[in-house]
Length: 215
Image 1: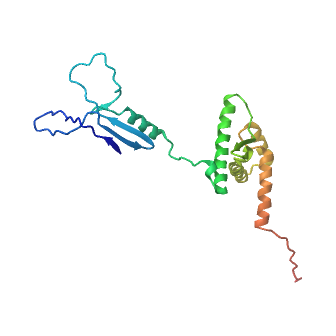
Image 2: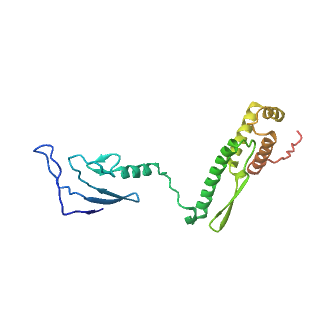
Image 3: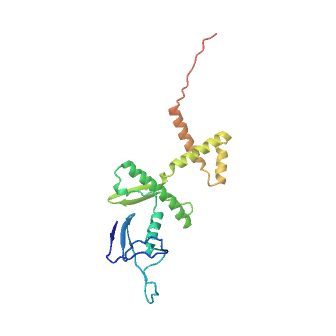
């Protein structure tokens, strides 16, 4: 914090005889830095009489002749600043951090693209692939792979519900034909086959022949 203390010193006006009187000089400047902003406060004493044809630079809230509008604007800027300030992608050295950032970007792009396509009346439309340049590096994102985990979870839930309710393959096909929000029957069938193959690997089942001695 820096300040300029002039030689022409004036004192504050007393409101009562017992009131303290402080020496606050005219044209006194106080300069400081707040959140990267340089803030300068200056005291300017005004005459008790009317000042005609004079322009003033003081606007907004005035406290002891301080023009604090700049402080208010700086405070607003700080309040609207996002809490999670991400580092630039170019300074990330870890491949895991770069991949994580790209995955987050892909999810945001995939989400926003759906909104934009819907606003432009592009029905049943999806962006499959996007490519952009970061510095000298070309990065491609396959947006069709963004929500694979969510799709797998939803398909597994459908398979579980069909098994519990004893819904056949043909029965689910008729249900999926009624509602476009349901997974297609062939997608559920493919997912069921993958689950079956995975279960055969982790829990192998063998057939064995047991010969009983004749009694």
